[in-house]
Image (tube, rainbow, N blue to C red; front, side, top):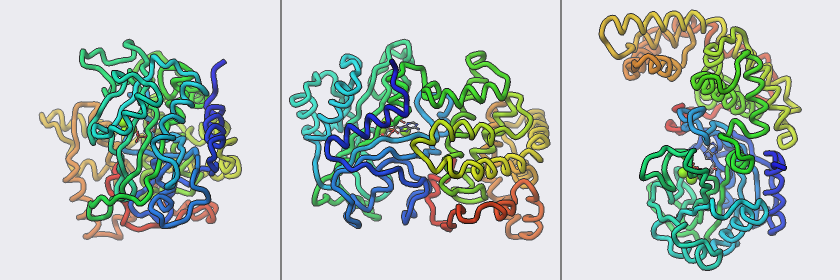
Length: 470
Ligand code: ATP
Ligand code: MG
Ligand code: MG
Ligand code: MG
């Protein structure tokens, strides 16, 4: 009897309730009062004020399952077994309450006793200087020394912009040689999918300020993050995140819609997984009040939807379809996120509107782009010019990364610097004309007819540019 994703979530939250934690619902994907972050990307992110002492937590021990978006992982989606732009992160948190001596044995207890993962498949990493963590893993928990790997700052020191940070310790599951890259030096920490990292225990000892100074927090904290889909992938013994029960139901529906079979061609499988992922992330974003637009979060949403729409084309789907697949996402996740059911119609309307808008120009845009690709190759050039990319953007509503992705499939790159120059030029010279020219592919007017209460507030340009770069 394999545990489903929804059951695993409940098991985890119950387990930590049993250890005195207060269960809080997931926070919105839209950060509140945090200009350093475009979208919530970890369980800890919305709890920052409790870690820094800015706000008093409702209890010193808290457990959550947090919706997360990580657009920087987008290139990996559909290709690795373990990355989605959307995932749920399970976490147990201590605000100056318990520390390593409790957090480590509890994590082990959950994994080996509650879930009964085979101990001989488990590995642990620690920060190279963290002898304290080594002692606890080795002496208190009984993990053999050769199963504890010391790693450097890049992997085992956790920080995201400013705020709480510190050394961390991660738990890995060995899925066997056949899942690995086959390289002779493949081991824990290798980027392939053999040793799959699934739980990160962060020992938050410092606060990092805007100038990059680390100061010791008066009371150290615990912040852990375990990807629910990754955990389910291990527990259900499936190949990748997209084959986990609830996600697989979305994937199957994508296949049904496209009339294609999963596992027939690797190329198609990637498109199927990309769509499956992007419809999950966009459904969740819209449910939390993000609407497609040309900046910030709205642009992230737009790019995800348009990228998914284009992968739909690759599978031979020639009509709006994502709004329909959103229904499956809602059905699979509504127990944990009741707002999905409440906003079902709204979510589907927003997605459908965006699809219909892009549908007006995508086919023509794709034809133009293949013409550009041919021209470029004929000239023995390797680069799509800034003007071409701008034309695709302005007239056909192609986000630059979509143009880049398609160009790369033909071995070409895009002059993105030139593209930005074109953007600037047109912005300055003929703002009015340009706005007119954008026409139906970009206009946001349609959203004013949708439920205004769910619209998100505009946060300006202070958002983290790195995060915004899908
Ligand atoms: P990886 O090295 O595999 O990219 P990470 O080190 O970036 O993962 P963390 O920042 O440590 O991940 O996040 C904590 C946990 O969240 C991870 O151990 C994993 O279980 C999960 N997680 C992180 N990124 C993703 C993702 N893109 N999709 C699904 N789960 C993820
Ligand atoms: Mg990562
Ligand atoms: Mg990692
Ligand atoms: Mg990690």
